[in-house]
Image (cartoon, rainbow over all chains, first blue to last red; front, side):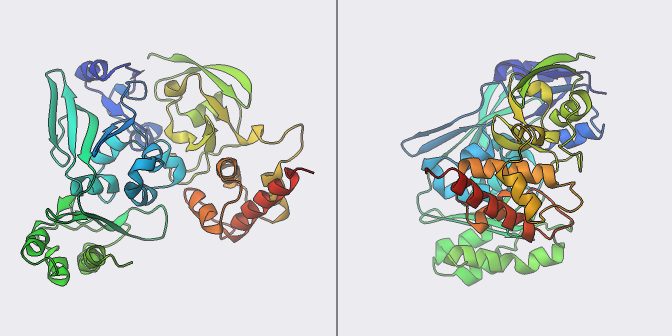
Length: 254
Length: 162
């Protein structure tokens, strides 16, 4: 049973409170549904709302985003327009006013489209524990005693592509999500087809050898996926349509 | 249990309440302050029936731990009509048959208010995106979209300099 909601004023204070064994709560879009139904098995909630982790900095080509920045703030940032289609494909405007960048990294698929985009961008995250900060790839696991403090990445060197197949035009979790930076170092990330965002490495290898081989790369994107059934689509359907959306992303088709 | 005193400005009135850990803004509004326009639907941020304006931005009130927004300003449907006069959005919903059972209406209107405050001349697509987090199981949405566009037009006319 919940006994206290903590409001630490810094990331260090928040990490220290994690010793109590509680849950971190960012925007509340994942934790509050559990609180509302009494299904929270912890005594302590540690809110990051006042921990000083919100904000976006663009310095030259380097982007740094605080973990408690809301999706709405990111979706309104003038210098990061290429990410606006990613943000507007996630949930609804009221939910985006609460949901945080850090939280999006940690939700299971088929949610977490921003995490897919950040994987394509080769983003790094800073995670803080009582032992200090370490910087890890955006798809590396974060331990229970750690807090994501910020995300950083370089503006894409190459063409940016993002496609998300949804049940309807707005406010749907992903059937298949494709994010890619096309260029000398092509990176393709997939959502909706595994428990976590994954790289389409076989497809990347084909494009590295032959940049025009979009069809073959799209077929190869199935390699290594672990699709699942849920309310949005079956594993069979996700597998069936994945190459279509990868091909469209690679060729810039709608 | 470490309850906390929370101050809010709700519909321009100063309020103070005692919140148990994890109490949602929705529960504080409905159960403590008696403001029952915002509805408790899904309690997981998916239906939009509890949408209120938190510091002028629409949010599902069920997802906000009220302790985290101490000092904030909140507007609910109860704070929309001025001096008993329905505003343009409310009037358009009424005249355009945009409400049937009424359960979604408070959330729909608050979402529409937020849209029109930042975008007084929205396109149909912008209206559809704005209300994409508000579920209505009666109307099929068409009268709601029409009412919001109508409200925008009413507001432009009423605020046009003479």
